[in-house]
Image (cartoon, rainbow, N blue to C red; front, top):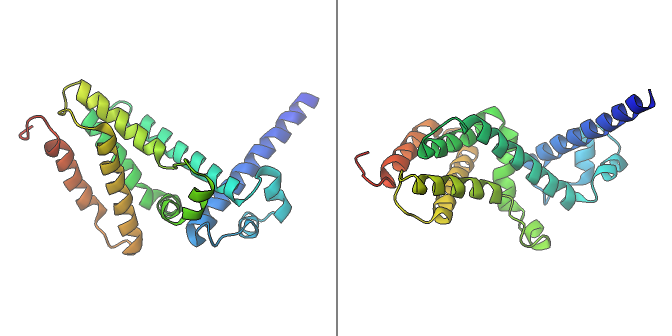
Length: 206
């Protein structure tokens, strides 16, 4: 019975930590990390201020955990959803589309990822070398290498292509947020699919 009690307590701590992370993401997405406070997160999560510090050392620690865990979860979800796509170019398009779908499925997460990358300059100065988008870049670069090795596309710089694709994805979401949902994401995505197929193919007619 004691062992069961310990498991319940551990599960409770994990659930509360997740609840705090979700509350923080919503607060950071709405206010930006520069303006948001730990008190705002506590209020959103409906817990005492001191409870946040039980799980996180500071606002920077909370922000970094949000970035790491949210982005990791999204990448892992995309990998699972695209794992059965044999053509690496179609897999990249699937990656692109699943991430773009965030604006409809989880708008506050899309806003958090997009806004924080732009607004967390002071955070970046305090945490040199930390790049919250690196997981996205690594995934695209590695998939691009597979496309090159299989002869699906010509030899290009995988890192440069990763910057190109992730940058386009980021700007599209930013424009969607800035234009109050007026941007036709589907139409833009169809054009990007065409570029992925013809713009980097060995034979442009393929």
